[in-house]
Length: 132
Image (cartoon, rainbow, N blue to C red; front, side, top):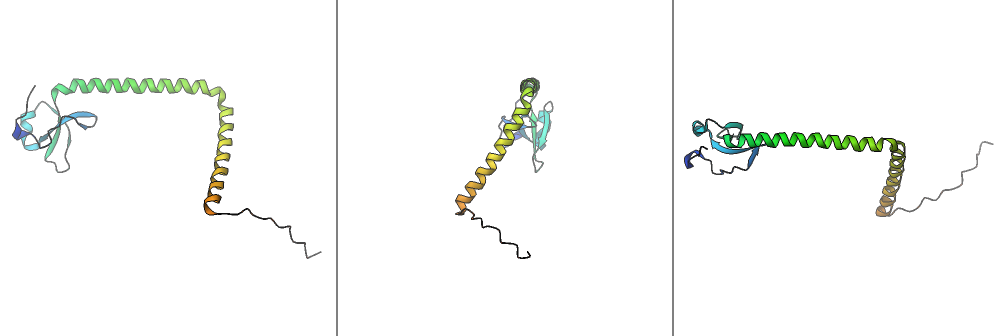
C-alpha cells in the first residue's frame, strides 16, 4: 500500500473522514500525483484539498455498499410482511385513529383553557322574538 509522506498530507490526516459514504484521506491537491491510484470522491470548499479513497479501501467500501443494499432490501421485505398482516385490520385501525384524533384535539383545547385561565361559557336563553 502506498504511504504518503508528511509533505503530501494535510494537517488533519484522518482516514475516518467520510465522503459520499466512502472512507477517504485528505490530500493536498498539489501532491495528488503521489496518490495516482486512489479515487477522488470530493474536494474541499477552497479546492486545496482532495478527499481520496485509498486503493486498499475500495473493496471494503464496495462490500459495505453491498451489505447496505441487502439491509435495505430486507427492511422493505419486513415492512411489506407487516403491512400484509395489518391489512385485514385496516377499518378498525382507521376508526381507532379517528377516535385518537378527536381525543387529542379535546385534550389540547382543555390544556389551552387551563393554561390561559379560561372560564366555562355560560349560555343564556335566546331573546324572545320581538317581531311577533
